Each structure stands twice: as C-alpha cells, then as structure tokens.
Amino acid sequence: MAERAMRGDRLHIAIFGRRNAGKSSLINAMTGQPVAIVSDVPGTTTDPVFKAIEFQPIGPAVLIDTAGIDERAEGLGAERIKKAAAVLEKSDLALLVVDAAAEEFAFEDELLEKFRRRSIPVIVVANKTDLSPGQGSGWFRDKPCVRVSALSGAGLEELRRRILEIAPSQWEPPFLRDLVKPGDVVVLVVPIDTGAPKGRLIMPQVKALRDALDGGAMPLSCRESELAAALSALRSRPALVVTDSQAFTPVAAAVPDEVPLTSFSILSARQKGDLPALVEGVLAVPELKPGDRVLIAESCSHHPLQDDIGRVKLPRWLNEYAGGGLRIETVPGSAYPDDLSAYKLVVHCGACTLNRREMLRRQELPARAGVPMTNYGVLISFLKSVFPRALRPFPELYARYQHAAWPHGRGLGGN
Image 1 (cartoon, helix red, strand yellow):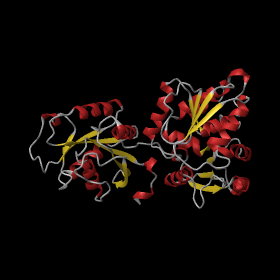
Image 2 (tube, one colour; image 1 turned 120 degrees about the vertical axis):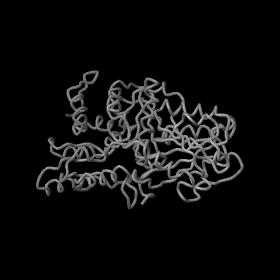
Image 3 (tube, one colour; image 1 turned 135 degrees about the vertical axis):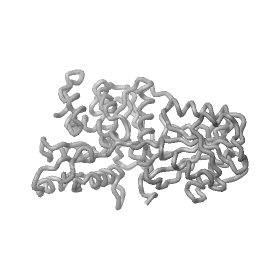
Image 4 (cartoon, one colour; image 1 turned 30 degrees about the vertical axis):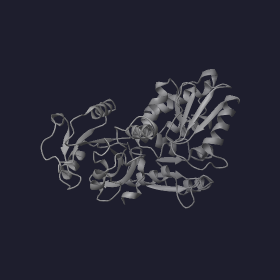
C-alpha cells in the first residue's frame, strides 16, 4: 500500500515554480486525485503539500507541492519562501514548473542554479501547453524540458518516462540486509517500555525486521529480558544482534563477544546519513568540560516522556561522564538554532523520519560551523562501554577505531 511506507524511505519528488504556474494542477494530474487546492488566486498553496504515491517501477515516492518561488519576501511570503527552501534540502528529484507562455525567467534560473549546486536532478515542466500550443520562449530549448498540460493530461506519460530516467536508482543504502546472508538468523532486541508506542514497534525496529526478510535472513525478536533464553534456544550463533541503544549494557553482557552486535539507531544513522562522520564526532565527548554547550537534535516532535531519552537520559549520562555542569539543550523538529558555532557537540537522533538527503544536510550544517556531531546510538555505545564493539559489523569503521585511544588517558570504554 502506498500510504504504508514511511515518508523518510520514499523518493522525494518536489514540485517548484511561480505562483499560478500550475504546480497544484500538475500534482493532482500526476496522482489522479484532488490532492492540492487549485485556484486562479495567486499564492493559494501556503504550506508544502505531501502526497504519498506508488511510482512504479521505482516504488514508494512522495510528491511535494510548494508555494510559489516568486512570493514577496516579507510577511507570510517570506515564511512561504523559507518553507519551500526547506523542501529543497530534502528533494531527491525536482520538477520546475514553468508557464509555457512565460517570457521572463529570473526566478527559474536562480532555482536551477540551486539544484545544480546540490546535485539535484531536475526536469523543467513547460505547463499549460493547451493555452500556449506553440514552442514558446527559446529559454526552454537548452533545458531538460517536457511540455505538458495538467488540464488535458497531454505529456504526462512523457514526464513519467523522464522521471524514471533521471531518478536515483538507490537513494538510501540497505538497513541491514547487506550485513547478513540468506538463511542467517538475526536477533532483534526490542524493549517494551514507556517509550514503546502502544500496539506498535518504532520505525527502525520495523525496518530492521522487513530488511532482514527482504534479504532472506530469519529475524527473531525478543525483549532483553528473554534474550538469554532466545540465544540458548538457537542451534547456532546468530549472524547479527541488533538492540535498542538504551539496552546496550545488558544485551552486550548476554551476547557472546564473537557475535556482531549493534543498535537500531546506528543502523538508521548509516542508512540515513554519514556514519563515519558521526563516529568521528564522538571523539569530542572526552573533551567536554563544565560550562560547554551541547545540542541534542530530534528530527521529529513527540510528547516528552517521564524518562525521555533526549531530554532526560542523555543529558544525565553526558553530565555523569563530563563531571557535571554541561549546558544541554534539546531541540525537536527540523530547525537548528541559527548559530551552531556556540556548541561543542551536536547529538542527533536516529533520523528515522528523515530521508537521506535531508540528514546529510543536517550533518553538513554543524560541520560548516566546525562543530562535531554524533548520534544517539554511537554516543550511547561509548557512554555504556560498548564502543567499538558496536562498530564491529562495519569492518572498515571497526578497523579504524578498535585500537584508538581517547584523550586524558581514557580508554575506548570496551572492545
């Protein structure tokens, strides 16, 4: 079902263009549904509109309708421009919709340059050809252009073919199936605590289960309290054990040292972002001292729990390690503070709600400010003395850090 794949796992196809270029009409024509409001009044689309679709043979995708790029840069217009720019950072592929009868293209040229700088593949969609049957301006001639009419449907099949031609063949690496072979047993340790959604599993746990099945492996799920019994019931050792990061300590004690062990959060960070850079970022933890500022960044908004990982546990564990006095801020949602240079460390969640392009962008911003960044799973593995064992499933990373030494004579906190 198109609606059941997680948004972060979909190919993101974003639709940009001026007000009344026909963006909303195009998204409605592509989906065959009245997804976006269509009106002759300029600026009808305010917030981005997301529509999950199945785009075969690619599979699950999401179409994103944005506000007009020629909005006035003040008041609500400025806010709409800001939201459209945020969509740009998560776009795997862009459709730039232009009125086929247009004669001025300053906004379009500026946006095409932004796509080029970000290596975002783009198709220029010359829309409203039913109203402008001629070839239009020569501006279109040297562009990757498809002429369509969202009203009549003309050109939509050609647009679909071009999307298939330029879409990334793989916009995310596998979650874990490249770490195991068909027939391997994978043990997934899933705590059932106050953080577990009632009647459901959290996204990374679901992805691990499905990816193991897709790879022909045999997943076995249990709580940490039943892990020892589950391992003893197996005829042979599992090829991989994956745990919730918060259960690293008891799970590491129960799993034989020769069995590869990592966490859902680390696997999510590998799929969504640059795991080596996040591992490198944890090198900053031993340098933290009282008074230093640390930013904990959550990619989604949720109701804080009594023992919330981002607001309670991680601040407590970091302060215990650093000797107290850290100034720790937790920021939910997609926005960072404007000035990241004031922080000594950024700690990001597993990014399960983000797509890969967006997570890489979120890593890029602290790097530009010269601030190291790590993620929940990598940090917890260090603080709970399981690092670098948690990296052992990734041979290159493990080889790099297994003999490393931390500053101030502190060891790696486990092997």
